[in-house]
Image 1 (cartoon, one colour):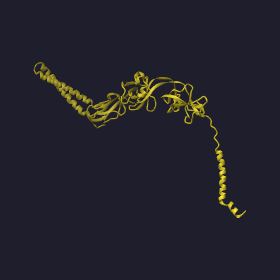
Image 2 (cartoon, one colour):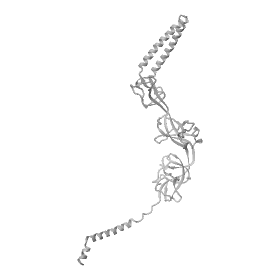
Image 3 (cartoon, one colour):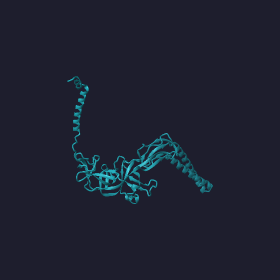
Image 4 (cartoon, helix red, strand yellow):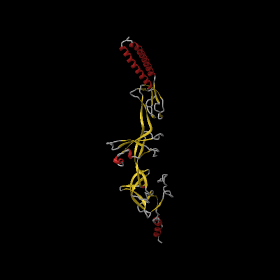
Length: 378
């Protein structure tokens, strides 16, 4: 071999080229193995509910606000220095219970003066009475004494009444609020508000119904006869254990808002309903038979309406358009589109496509959603 050929085969560039060629062959072989198609997967496991017609109450649910049956202002009827607060703020009080004490001393003095004047005029009337009968004094003098005595007795009653008003009492039974004035403040009749008392038992809930809700009632307005029961949902989502009743139904429609004003009354002996709370009011208007309950998550809303995914006879996912009504707890009330025995899919809905093979299982089976304590999907 010549010197030139020997230098060509021993050059670094030729060695590097051969190394890269070998690596490319190896990678090409690996790529052919990765390009193999994945093995086919089995049917998608899904949880289904067997649809059976049910009877559910028809009701209208709206937002409302609670208030006390009575809310009375506690005001001072006389002025003076506020000496003492006699109640615990936020605690229940009884009707007539003492709440505040205003300085009594000036009114005790005024009552003593009025009493002395009334006694004097009474003695004067008694002295002149005999003389008037004997014609020893003019009748006018006696009449003036009688009038003066009457005015003195009236002034005495007013002075005693002012003295009693220095003790400010609760006008109604209920829960006393925060004191507006503190000890040492000068109370005047122009600025006499001291606190308020709310009667929390029974509790009232104010609410209103819009045009859409009113359309569910005869003549598009609510009457006491059209409402079978009134239920209350507290802020934590729990249902109040006692049902209420309507105690006010407006006879007209608010022309500004297009709503009808209503008020319900609930027994609140345990004080679970607090004035000012926002709650939900349910008006039970009757019953609807032959409907189906489907979990909210299983009903899809689109431009063409509501639909659910069902399992066909060939165990394939089949979309089904339905007519959805109102909510019943955590379920949709389905008014049409389903029949008894249909199997509605309630999970893995994001992964499903129409016509995809599925493997149905009942709630509570291995891997399936377990029903809640009330028999519904958890």
